[in-house]
Image (cartoon, rainbow, N blue to C red):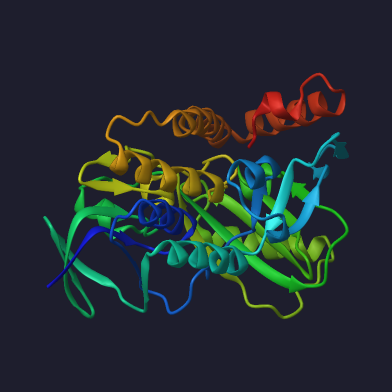
Length: 338
């Protein structure tokens, strides 16, 4: 039976970052990915601009970088302008390819098309046979098998629906309409040669089916040509209940680290992947950056719950928020959306 120091289930941004750091420090590291390709994930591709530098990601991974945001609500429409870019878009396939190369160059082994079917202490059953591990890292998304093995419930779930259409829209747009999307929103995120158009909402606020129906009605009213592109959907886990269950760890969506307010999860996934690796290498490691992200997530989730409880209050709150940003009574950084 093959045995590794660390086995990581899931080759997403968090899992690959964890693998790279562990392998760089000499640990035998295996990444198992049930899909046949790396980076294939339903995702709008938005990430805080500062994350590219903080995470040391190459600048050429940027699809688009935006210092202005067009925001549309039922009562107002405005373009928020900032001195520096606040959001960039990235392509998940290109990010995955870069991270895969980083991990493999460090010595990690990546096996695609290999799913884990059962977990027990120290061993895994996979579609290709049995494996042994000292440390197990669940980076396997919102439906995480590792999370289920740990007996952790998953109640805070959002749904995202995405159409990646040909052509590049001129600006980034947010459409906040509680009547249609509850505490969620619709988006238009330009990439290099395509544009992500989609919607996000708390699954307990709107079912994915109803969200999709309302999104299509909204897109038609906006005269948006979806170009015959097929919709893709994914669940987003923001029900955080811990990440360190040594010798088992959770990363990214498996840990419930996405924002319940925006659905953004790439940045916390990568930060948590590195945090898990540093903690395995040094049990005394202090995860300060992840701690900051967890505080931000708590704020976002409180906002999400508040907006989900009352549509009228949600409408008034969002309108006041956008007005405060327009009048520069509140800065984007103070809001800490990202």
